Image (tube, rainbow, N blue to C red):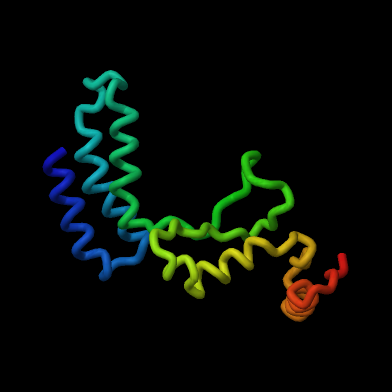
Length: 137
């Protein structure tokens, strides 16, 4: 695991020179292969820990998407373009442009988004909604 850690550190240092796809290939070839070496001897006892380490190791290489897919735990009235709002530790960040607009975006009803791409329809529905008028279906 120490060798995998060293290779991961090197990969983090050179990541600005590679695309995300290239970094993922390098990670799987260099880091993950070191972690999986003789894993059959572990008999699955460390499989969960290995996956946990793998997820943490991939985080700096492959940034998580700000978009997430709706599951049964989420409200059904959310639109499919909900963005993930990061946790805020300070009031200043909580009132920043990024957080305020993300909350407004997530609060938009699904009826505002047209079924096919149409920017003018979307803009008019958003304006009607934000000005207090009901958006047409």
